[in-house]
Length: 124
Length: 245
Image 1: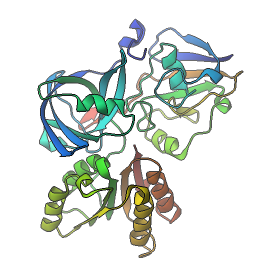
Image 2 (image 1 turned 120 degrees about the vertical axis):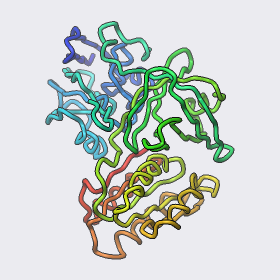
Image 3 (image 1 turned 180 degrees about the horizontal axis):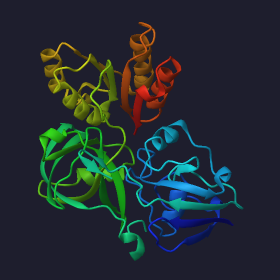
Image 4 (image 1 turned 90 degrees about the vertical axis):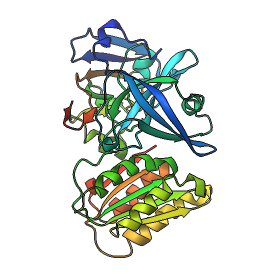
């Protein structure tokens, strides 16, 4: 079984999910088997304003462990990440980063401000 | 499933707006605009190109689907979204079932496919069908600035009735000689190939100028092909903005 540990900057309690990647998709948004798919399918909320279609950065997560176990980021994902606040070398979009290794152990950090609610004159 | 955040996560949720459908306009039998007046949640501020995320009840759960605002921030309310029927598009089917006076909920605005700065170099907009929505909002913003640079809009559709806002854009182009508007109608199977060919002819092979910027919005892989062509032809990566629907 693969495992994801989810750490919230907001201070919410950590969550750990064990799952079988072969059983993806777990719901209907994001790439099947993506971090977003796994979290939503296990009743953990992760923002995904565009519906998990790689058109915003609200599902931005920072991978703390197992970065190399995730699918490679596309140019489109990289372009979007460029616009994400708090970008790090191990940032990914939850809707695109897929876990295919049945033994993967991943830890992700969910920033408090996953943004993209850019609005004129301010906003996050 | 996805609409049941734990109490701990609820505090991170965005403000939710409720809007009433004030007007419906059918561009074509399968393409519609809804005009939304916010009745709960206050007003929103957005920049051209952004979208709102509408909560759509389907099969006993709530799904989130993005719809780009086709109206400009300067217009205020009602906000306009436009969409077309697509095979298997459950969200759109639900929206087509709404009537004037119905309400819907949304969060936002969201999105990074935006024009945040006044353009200072020649700017090319490329769209197909309903993906004109963000481009229309951007164009209106740019055209309001009398000092704008040369602008081009390449707009393709699979039928004349799918060239949305055509009369309006043609009026803009007649009034402003620095806006070049090129609508093209192409059979669906050839649409992306034709767009790519036009982009290559006009902005790759025609000259060696690589100081233009591009805003490309479209459906499917055609956008990626245009992005790759432009970036591979010497345009700066960050001068090629795009959004793939």
